[in-house]
Amino acid sequence: MNLAKKLDALSAPGMLYEKAEGNALRCTACAHRCLIREGKRGICQVRFNSAGNLQVPWGYVAALQADPIEKKPLYHFFSGEKALSFGMLGCDLHCDYCQNWLTSQALRDPAAEGAGRFVREITAVELVALAHQTGSSIIASTYNEPLITTEWAVEIFKTAKTAGLKTVMVSNGNATPEALAYLAPHLDGYKIDLKSMQEKNYRQLGGVLQPVLDTIQRAHEMGLWVEVVTLVVPGFNDSTEELWEAARFLASVSPNIPWHVTAFHRDYKMLENDNTPPNTLLRAADIGREAGLRYVYAGNLHGFAAGEYESTRCPHCDKMLVQRHGFSIRSYRLTDKGECPYCGEKIAGRWTSEPAKVDLHGSGMPRVI
Ligand code: SF4
Image (spheres, rainbow, N blue to C red):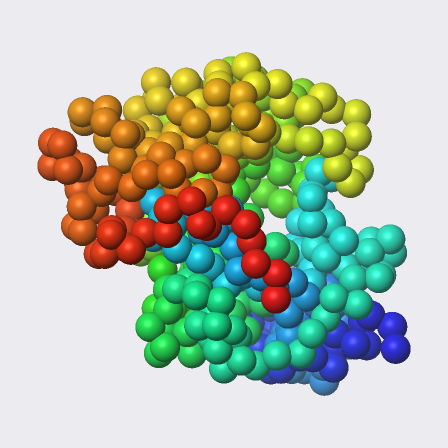
């Protein structure tokens, strides 16, 4: 069976769409808003029109492991806890530097045809049971783009919340107001990529800038916990002007949004650009701070001055509050109310109410299931 047939068999009726003329449908799961005629697929290739009905991915995962929540990366969302992380196949963008291209570009790039071997049928109840077995207090929809599988994520999140788990999505942010409204009652944390501030760059990746900016603003206003990641790619988005533009935008939404600037390494089709030098990343982090962001992190530095840029300090008294090394927590000093114990400053985020139970040192290695 080819991959498309295999995935089509693992689908269910979707919710995020509008009826269009004839038997056509307008999908509203992501900002592409594809008009899908009968028998056709959307840009992501995994949502399709079957006899006038929208079918969407359902009942499988293509990647599954228990990760430290710091790996998503989410640094202000129950630090030190584990997230059972699941991915599926497909994406609505086609980033040339994607590190998960084998799964994200399934059905879009013939070179990714072999991704079918990762598919594993599973139910929401089984996923929640696996979360408990692995000591995960969080379930994360991640690895590929979760917006294109929103309905299946919501099914899992509903079951997870009933079982007392927290829920997050790790997304490119190319959302619609409809998808966010559908997700929000069941979602706690939302990591969003801000890949560039240039429209031409987003076009190159297969998207549009404004919906991503709108998603960051809207998700924050809806009360989701939002952290933003910018992969800094030399020659693509690393100019001082562009980094300032991104930082100013985030600070205008809220200075409490954590901004992660992370290093690019050559991958997939982007093999010409240089890997990000540490100094570029540190320049980006400094710009974030100068722009007024209170929590700025530099990731993928591979040991270069990493500790200072991975850890959370109090923005008021500058004392070390969460000391990280890689994905591990070395020390944790927040109070049970998420405050600095030295000056009482409230630290933005969602924090454990039982700091004594934070898993120091132990959260570093992902657990493959
Ligand atoms: S999720 Fe996005 S890309 Fe996929 S069909 Fe819907 S609108 Fe199109």
